[in-house]
Image (cartoon, rainbow over all chains, first blue to last red; front, top):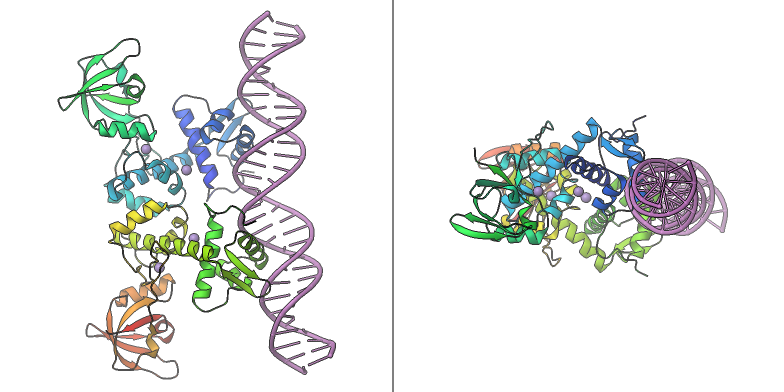
Length: 225
Length: 225
DNA sequence: CGAGTGATTTAGTCACGACTAACTATAAAC
DNA sequence: GTTTATAGTTAGTCGTGACTAAATCACTCG
Ligand SMILES: [Mn+2]
Ligand SMILES: [Mn+2]
Ligand SMILES: [Mn+2]
Ligand SMILES: [Mn+2]
């Protein structure tokens, strides 16, 4: 069977695939409720869509267990992810957006732009490998780099690391981080780690920053090379 | 009643409104079949949508006669038109598109971009008043300039005019015109007008161009100031 | 092992926006 | 002033993607 669906995927389908990809990527299993929560939909809506996705051979469905992307589904998800992240990067670099307000725009545009436009944007940006939040941009062939990062609270006092990636999309957090200069690419040294889920103190260009545990957990760092 | 519909209009609704605007603008009456032809839809689909548009107070429907935009409908149409034309201009000026391949992209993106993004693009372009085809870009408040133009075949031999606007969206025609340098803003002098729907000969920067009647009719000119 | 609980699926409905087939209004032709 | 062609509308259907209410599965706990 594998119904058509080949050429054009609807906005809904694309968003489902992306959410399923994210869930499996972060280790969670892509269950009906997890998908429903992520997309703010009722569970039966997801059950229905999952059936259609399975018919279209975009996912494998193990009833009552969850869902896994097929090769086709994964490729489709990565294609949208590429669009999303290039779009975000373009909006920030070329149109003066700040990293805390690009997400919603990209969430819509990722479904509307042509491959051609995305590749033109990518070229205009010098074919970047990371978006403003430090998330890797999948290549055209679906390849995506896997950067191993460590959350800031797990870095030892005295160590110097780079901020590689930010694990939140919340606009207020992103604004606070940007104000504090805590953005991907920046180098920081851990000055203090308070126990019992206490704050982390780092130095950035010689100035101190105290970062609450919650936020610190979302600062994903790489060690110096 | 005037059903919600206030905030978000669907892609279909927006395209209907734009087509209705175009038809009335060019003097044709916005009949069911005219709309159906323009959107490549079956007539009953249009009948159905017209009913919904009327319920939403976007058009006034005189059964068996046709349809007219209400104030709200006109404003909505002009908003999409602004998006479309700014998008086209941006794609050409900032992303290396040629004027013969921007239309399809803009046709989709006009429904997906936010007001904010469009205004950022407009600003990046220096708030242009015309798109690459010479079509006027409606202002934010819905105001749109009305340029009086004359089709090239109606210009007398010896007269010098500016090409102001191109009345075709056909990619092959646009490519030919661009190759010939016959684009909006260019100044040409009519050297010859052959009778019986014959071609027009013009000079452009001292070189001759012979233009078939069909195409010449789509070159809309303004006289020198 | 059976009961209970929470997750999941099924059943049935709805709005949107397309379609075809069939009917009807309008206006031109005789 | 009928007839007739054409344009427009109504009726009925379909696919998509959402919903609620009800049924069912799977696992945990006593
Ligand atoms: Mn999206
Ligand atoms: Mn991002
Ligand atoms: Mn459109
Ligand atoms: Mn145009």
